Length: 127
Image 1 (spheres, rainbow, N blue to C red):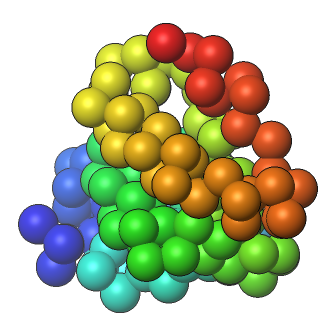
Image 2 (cartoon, rainbow, N blue to C red; image 1 turned 30 degrees about the horizontal axis):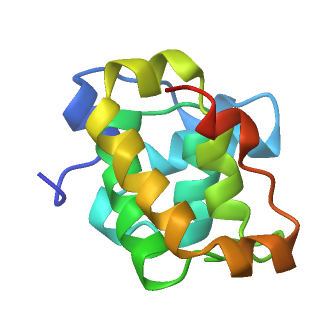
């Protein structure tokens, strides 16, 4: 599965990157054509922030966060977790097992999260 790209996984063409109206949209459309196994933490942060293929990308992000709760894309330490915390709550309500995995990471990484200034209260309040 991870050798496939989002276009293949979703069975949907999201459009041609050269027709994108902004650089961010262009990058997202480019990433839709890249095997998800090749995604960097920044790619995950961007695509999760734009709510692309969460069912495939959130488990991959969790793997990165298990190694380092403050995994960094291109913005700041912990930006991948911040993107996860900002996912629409409906996703977490429909994917309780993934929510529990993230909660375990939060519990184990509280000290680092406090140092990084990452607020998890809203996420924790979902259940």
